[in-house]
Image (cartoon, rainbow, N blue to C red; front, side, top):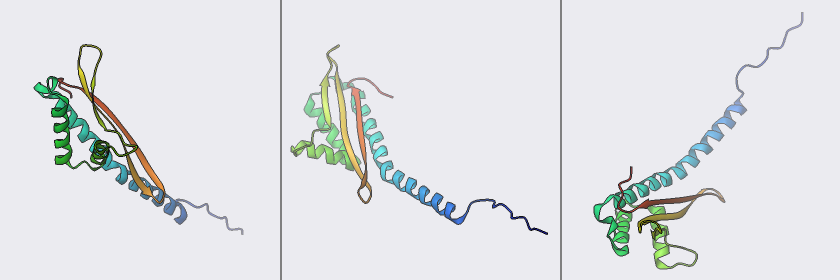
Length: 142
């Protein structure tokens, strides 16, 4: 009588280890870039708050930028604060992330932000996050 070999059912130890390693890599990547996305949502929120103020249409550039700086200092936004102060100091290769743009139609103004954050991950691998947002001053945003 010949014994029939039974086929293996389920995952082997190696496949479990590979699955766990992939899961750990995904979770560690999420933990690295997650705070930067939360920071970006805070930036959008305070820009909408500035734009929603009734006096925002008539404020000059200095008043608007002082409000932006106040929000940056109070909310401790590390990625954007670094880009903001590097641009303000005139470091080579850096630009100011916040700009006040006058639109051609209707003489309206927009507050725009454009900055990049580099989040190191493993060894020489890093995430480069590029954020852009604009809001028209004097309008209430959702």
